[in-house]
Every structure is written in structure tokens, then in C-alpha cells.
Amino acid sequence: MIYAKFHTKSGERIKYHKSSSVWPGIKFVEPINKPFIGWIIGNGKKINFWRDTWAICTPLREHIDLPIHL
Image (cartoon, rainbow, N blue to C red; front, side):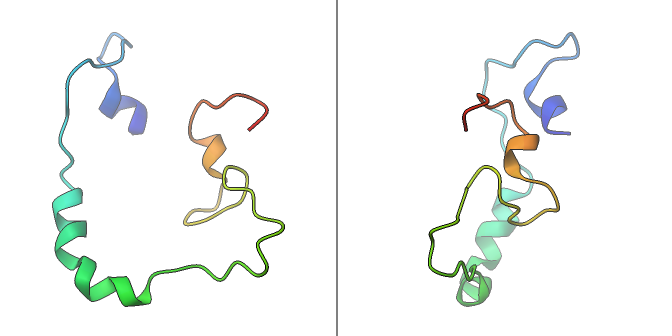
């Protein structure tokens, strides 16, 4: 789904801005939801932003093309 949003049918990356259909809704409900959003991360010594699972069942790095060292 993300690939389709940022690539043409021929597989090339788009070179123009595409607005989000979801973002206006997220901004609209932010004042209501903001007090309830957050993570309890313990002491912070074992956090790996790219390899830990946050809002989905798989790490972020599996959804985007990152260098192997991250």
C-alpha cells in the first residue's frame, strides 16, 4: 500500500506532493486523543526505534528500505 502511494504504475518514485486523506482526520481528533497516547518504555536502556514493535506486530525497519546497520 505504501509503495503504491509513492510510486507510479511503472515503478518509478513520484516527484510531486500527494496529500493524505487520513491526516486531516488525525489532526481533528488530536485534542481529544492526545492525553491518552503514549508508551511506557521502562528505563530506556533497551529501546531500538527501528527494531522494536510500536503500533503494529512487526518492526518499522521491515516496512521500509533501511541500511542493514540500523
